[in-house]
Image 1: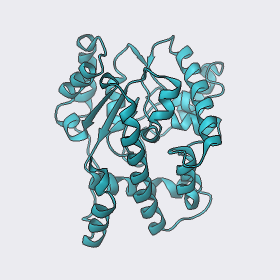
Image 2: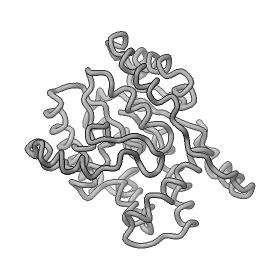
Image 3: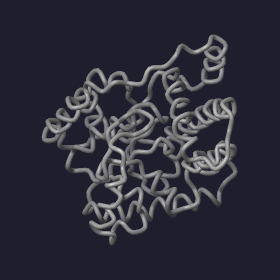
Amino acid sequence: SILGHMRSGTTYLHYLMSKDKQFGYCSVYNAILPHVFLIGGKIFKRLIASSLDPTRPQDNVEISIDSPKEEEFALANMSKTSFMFGFYFPKRAQRNFEESVVFKNAEKERRHWQRHFKFFLQKLSFVNQGKRLLLKSPANTGRVKEILELYPDAKFIHIHRDPLVVYQSTLRLYEKIVPMTCFHQADAEEMKEFILQSYESMLEKYFIDRDLLRPDQLIEVRYEDLVSNPLGTLEGIYSKLQIENFSTSKDFMRIEADRTQNYVKNKYAPIADSELELLKRRWAATAS
């Protein structure tokens, strides 16, 4: 499972590793129609594909009906527990985050999430013919313990990035997406506070949960290293997690890395000194 706060490079890593044919993954189609993708056939798939934009609105990353997609969208479509609901109801985003990601005083929600997560993965495993599943969800950074309870031998890749860039990019994400999805408005200061709080609490829980893992179950990588040396970073991941067949898949991953090497990243205005000091103070404990 690929972990990391949103805007930390999880999608790029997911796209690269999905080129390894030994893995199955959740596609855009699976995520949009988690209830019926086993029986929906080509008609539903064609209908959805025809309505998709070719790139994501927040960062212009290419996307198609068969692209890898985070399973969080499937959970939002098939259950009552998902990080995604914060985009629909931003004024209660923090409460939703606590109930559906870090499960703070939320035992009922924790069991509900585990039940639906397991059910979806069973369907995903079936449609991928029993292949090892390559999952990716930023929200799962706060759910390592809960995933281990279901799958004790699960392996995790945590990708992290310069927190200042993560903050700016996450803020841009909410500015782009929330107006298109929300049922009520939240002002900019409310969203900034949610970003600060959710980052703190998710990383705090992750640092606790990672102590439950064996050495061969976790590797932590820097986004900057992945971008500057994608194949070297991937080889390190395969070695640390004892995943076989890197040599037979690296050429496919090299093609994907080469294809996206000219991708133009978003640019951001300089952050105010007062906001930068607040960020450093609030997120100091997450630098572990």
